[in-house]
Structures are given as C-alpha cells and as structure tokens.
Image 1 (cartoon, one colour):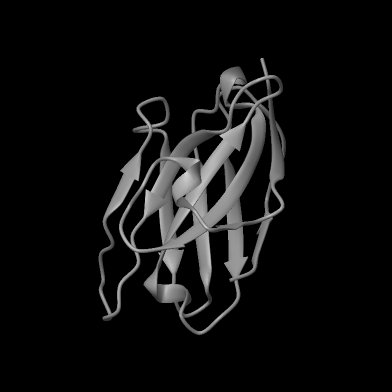
Image 2 (cartoon, one colour; image 1 turned 135 degrees about the vertical axis):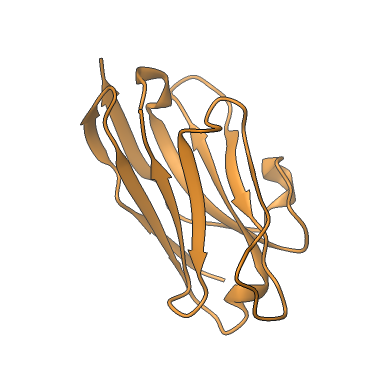
Length: 127
C-alpha cells in the first residue's frame, strides 16, 4: 500500500483544516487507516484511526486520542481510496507533521503496529 497525504498548511488557532490521504491497491477498504503526528523534538503520537472491513459497511469503527476527541473527525471513502482527517478548533499544540498510516487488521494506536506510512504533511497552527 502506498499512501500520499495532503492538506497541511498554516492556520490560525481556532481554525479548521482537512487532511486527505490517498492509498493505492484494491484492498484499501480492508485496511485500518490511521493518522499520527510528530512535533519537533517529540515522539510520534497517535491521533485517530478508522477500521477497515471486508464487507460493505456504512459505518466504520474509529478511535481518537484524548487530546483531539471532539475536535477531529476521521472518515474514509473506500470508492476513492481516501481517508480524511477533519480538524476543527485547532490549537497551537496541534502543530506537527501529520502522517497517514495503514495496517491490516484491527484498530491500533501504537506506531509500531502500522506497516505503511505516507510522507507526512505539515500543519502549523499560529496562536
């Protein structure tokens, strides 16, 4: 699976930004997709993940880090092989490089559990 993330940029605190990630492969829909972020000098941290499925489903299970719960929403479009991260009420501490990831199997929140990584997209929130 190859992943290409986009949508990063500079935004003021309180603003919104939407990240997108396009994946390759016919089995995209079966992969759990995740977003992680890494701020300068900090470890990579989990943001959100959404489960894949082998059957057509109208709702996919998802999980969020406590720090973004209620502000960020992860979604996927298996027809277009994309996963998105809608980020609202952004804070300065959300500034980081955001990475799109994929893994076969269930939802996980540790980066070592993910097999495929995109190149990252920078989000900068000015206060």
